[in-house]
Image (cartoon, rainbow, N blue to C red; front, top):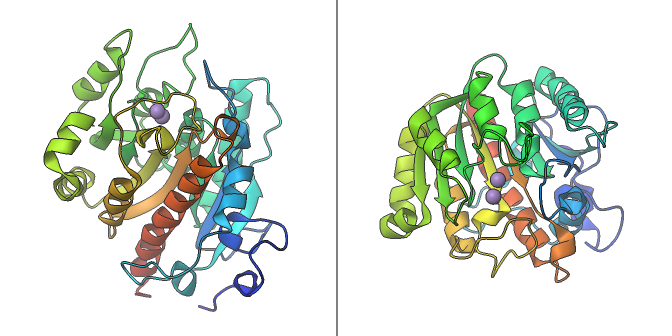
Length: 318
Ligand code: MN
Ligand code: MN
């Protein structure tokens, strides 16, 4: 397959309209293997918002990124047709159910085209409408990196928030809890119901203390065991990282993953059958340094490499 025109990489990186990873902006998903999508929505947040500004700042930060991975030497752009297809046009910005319907409608078109989506949020509520689009045929497993399980039943009487998406996803038959692992969980809660639901539904929950005890390599082994051979989604909440590195997020919890731990964790997942991924909860207004957006964009690149490996291996390209 012919690679897309990737001439953006040959121009100075400060020049031109910023797209994710300086990929071409394409409005028609036909013929693409992997699509990079912004989901600028933060109506699911109870406390500190600003995640609606995540996609634009991550696009800008992502112009720092290059092509060949320094460990694997894999170049996703040589192996797959990858483009930025813009932001989900969210019309119902004041209505979470309507906004989620807008997101699902967009990702249904992506899914129908056969492309694998890598999305930039947005708050974590966006993962549910994405899963409604791409996991409606069969439930998916999930690798979930986060300080929080996001499996509460409701917040302040609302069932659709950034603290509830994966409980809804299990209830709706989109997520197989037995093939789901949550990594990096920590921080006090006012109720244990989220932790309890995750464990009782069959998810493997690795609190940060167990993560530190096990080390990255054994966590990778465990994640691969849980996810198995079936389709799997990767959801990366930037608050899984320690706020010393990623302060620009709504619900910071100290004692989190370091960037190199998160990078090694994602790299270790290469070869799983990924059907999509997201990086969520980057809130640029809480980090004027811009480093949180750079971390988000860099984790997108790490994830893009393993998605591209999955796609190219599936059709025998690599
Ligand atoms: Mn989350
Ligand atoms: Mn979180």
